[in-house]
Image 1 (cartoon, rainbow, N blue to C red):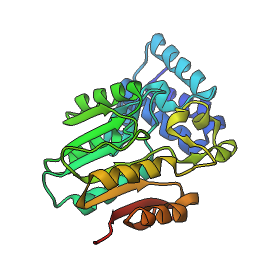
Image 2: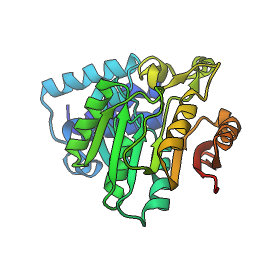
Image 3: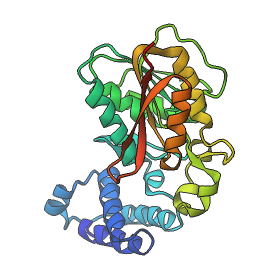
Length: 284
C-alpha cells in the first residue's frame, strides 16, 4: 500500500462514523503525527510504498477510532494553537473555544510584561503553555487536582520548553492566600450539567475524564464559585479573571460574580454562543 492509498483508506474507513470532513482531518492528523507526513509531503511522496507492519498499525488505530475512541487519544497527540500536545484519557482534548479564550487573554494582556498568571484546572496544560509562549516574560502557575493530568501537563511543558510551575491543588478546598497576587487568573473548569450528558457524543462522554467535564445539576456553578472565592483572595486590584463558561448558565454566572464584588463581561465565541466571562474587581 502506498501513502496515497493509506490516506484514502483512512478516509473511507472513518467517514461512516466521523463524517467526511472529520475523517479527512483525522487522516491528516494521523499521517502527520504518526508518519510525519505533511499534506505537502503527501503530494510529493504519495507513491511511496509502506511496509506491511505500518499498514497493520494503522488498521489497529482505525479499529479503535471506529469503536468510539477519540482519534487524539488513539494517536496520543492533539493540536492546539500550533502546538502538538500529548493527550491521554486523564486530560480533556483541547477545544477550539479554549484557543479563543487564550486569544482574548493575549489580546488584552500582550502589552504587559512580567505578569503573574495562574491556570486553574490545567489538564493537558494547553492554556498555561500557550500563555507562556505568547506573553512577555510571565510567571505562570498551573494547578490541578489530578496527578495524572499534571504528569501530562509537565511533559507537554518540557517538550515545548515552557517555564511553568505546576502544583497539585483542589480548587474546591478553602481558598489559599498566594504570596504574590495574580494579574491573570484563568480557568476552563468542569461546566457541563449532568442533565446535558444524554445529548452529548458518546466519543466524548464515554472516553474523556468525567471529572473534568461534569458538574451536578443542583450546583452547576460549583467550580466558578470556588474560583471567584480564590480570586477574591488572590487577584491583584487591577487584575482580571478569565473563564470559559457554559452558555446555559451565563446570566447566572454573571449574577454570582457581581454578588461577589466583580464586574463581569460575557463574550461570545465564534459560533455566537455565550462562552467566556471576563471579570474585574469592582472599584471601591
